Image 1 (spheres, helix red, strand yellow):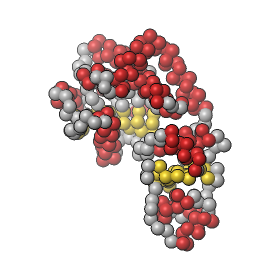
Image 2 (spheres, one colour):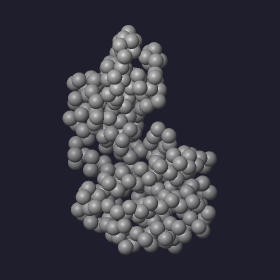
Image 3 (tube, helix red, strand yellow):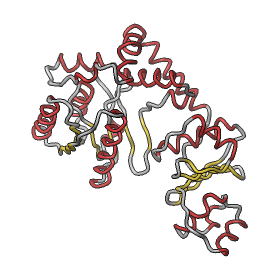
Image 4 (cartoon, one colour):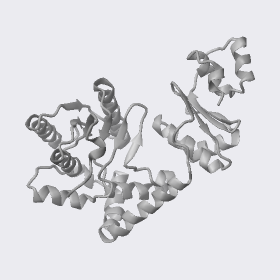
Length: 325
């Protein structure tokens, strides 16, 4: 199996590791091409085998001269998957900030991508949500890299077996009380086993179509956590621009929230983020309740700054004139 990892050849990388099929295969594939990386693993203490997986991570790190970061937590079964994911990514982001990593590498593969697609379709989703798994995802201070999205789980498992490489199987992956397992076992894995090439091609075509929509993922102006985008005449493109940006901020929009944004044009989402579509621009900034002085308010009015982002400018001592684009 030959993959091109040249994009991370000269960056400081952190591999999200679990000791399962996907991350174990990715560990050795990266190793084969001398890609620099360290590893991070979370032990949720819900399976006895997890201790062996952590031990394996330590052994690999020692043998191949990698740093290994371990986090131990105990979680209740209630909403376990979401809590586990939140803890995992919070741990990764803390490490990235502390040790100045450029890239978080994850071992998501084609089965995961199709599984996500089907789960989103079952809830009702547009093309942005359906194609939630992308090879690259920009965060504020780092990037997430998913290099295995065209490789199936079977291909990764065959690679490990043919090279006599150790990995673990998490038995909780067979428990259909978790929605992702239900979709995996009943739909996505079976579908992929019969139509792999067509599915790969369809994802490529869909991504090309999404790219052609000209959704603005990059701000025309960014000051601290305030971002300004060029608005479109197409409300659907505007809401996709907002949706993509809010995801980077850890906020997921519901259908009702999307509709309210387009109806009100100026709104606060989840008591956290101010969003405004005004003057052919889209403004997105953290929400604040501080009191402004009258002089600053008037300066904002003269520079046509939307009301719900003015307080953020005031708190950060940003001159409203700096937002004139």
